[in-house]
Image 1 (spheres, rainbow, N blue to C red):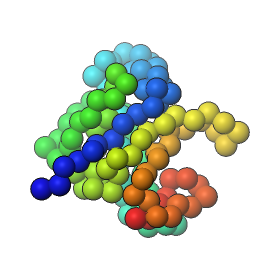
Image 2 (cartoon, one colour):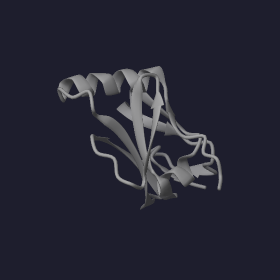
Image 3 (cartoon, helix red, strand yellow):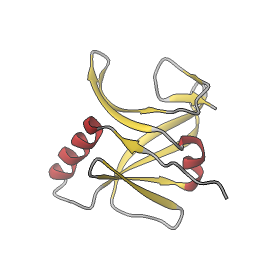
Amino acid sequence: MKENKGISATKSAASKVVELMESENSSEVMLRVSVAAGGCSGFEYSFALDNKKTSQDIVFESNGIKLIVDEVSLDLLDGSEVDYVDDLAGASFRLKIPNATAACGCGISFSV
């Protein structure tokens, strides 16, 4: 069985998750990172706040927050880093995926 590196979060991403946790009045909120087939490059990732873990989920801790990802998504995202960027294109979570061989202009679609 392959040893997973997991996923991590930058300080900026962790700070934004903490801000969202405070607005939800919950210290149990985790940032779920998932992948689905689609987008212009084959796969697209998404983020959601979640407070429930399933048997297929793995939780990683980084910079004081918990990131949750299912086993299938982790195969594609292993070693990735979640960042939070606020620039001219807008404010959003973004993912730096080391296994990606291509990405589209929208920044959420990738291929491996």
